[in-house]
Amino acid sequence: MLDQSYSESIWHRINQKTKPPGALGQLEQLAHQLALIQSNASGDAVTKVEINQPTAIVFAGDHGIADEGVSIAPSAVTQQMVLNFLAGGAAINCFCRVNQVALKVVDCGILIPVEHDSEDFIVQRLGDRTNNLARQASMTTESARQGIELGKQLVGKIVMSGSNLVMFGEMGIGNTSSAAAILAALSGLPVTQCVGRGTGISDQQWQKKVELVEQGVQRCSGLEVIDVLAQVGGFEIVQMVGGFLAAAESKTPVLVDGFIVSAAAYAASQINPDCREIMIFAHQSHEAGHQYLLSQLDAQPLLDLSLRLGEGTGAALSMPLVRAAAEFYNNMASFEQAGVVVD
View (cartoon, rainbow, N blue to C red):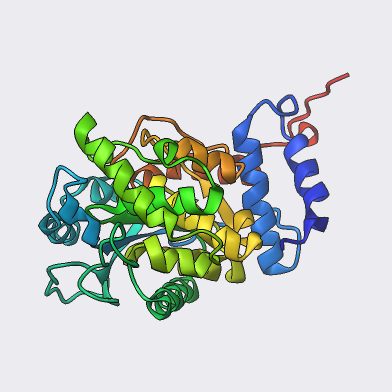
């Protein structure tokens, strides 16, 4: 848990800036959160928020439930998109470039492996893809634990290399089904509220998707979080869960992307509630269940652009707001410095 004793001095600094109290709205909350996290990391109340080597990590994994036709695309598209990430041609590449964010891609277990030699491509496969969650457990509990550990190690290394802000994205055909199942299983919400259109499926496909997710959720009654992840999770999702846990341990803020990443965030916060304090929610996805996830996490996202692409795109797009929050905290004049007197 973050030490809140720094909070008063941080708010005092924010409130002394040349503006009415609260006039910068969510940017003030964001600046406070960043400063509080960094104060905890340094052991002293910071007067300057540092943004060092921000890094986006795209976790890729395939899902057996894709064989049921719950997406408009086949599983082979996951590999094709991973190759697109590595070639620099995807939306996430564009948004990382324009916002000076490093990008790493992780093969957590995609159906068709990729041969690529680069320090920005990390292979930590838990298998070719998960089992079909509608018919059987997605993975063993041991695989879920292994995935969490791999995610923890990866984020730990990135932080040790100098990054003090990370963001998670994902790629995996069928993973909105897994995220919906996790939300329903952990929250008790009706599956119909949790299941969305994903890549843009028809009404008939949506109804089938609801029924399939329901079959997986029914096996989760009374289970611990790790066992829920084994029953209905994804290889990329369990590794993101581990990433959140590592970020909490190292006092590193995480920009949380959309529906699938938020499902991992929700699971991580159920394992360790302290995780919630380092999460910055970038945007509200257009995917149906995301608003319920944000509610469960008591989160107010920075943006609402009706996105539903994934990849970490919403997180990368929120970077200018993060930099703006740091900039005003660091360099905006106080009333005293500016010689402004408010009676």
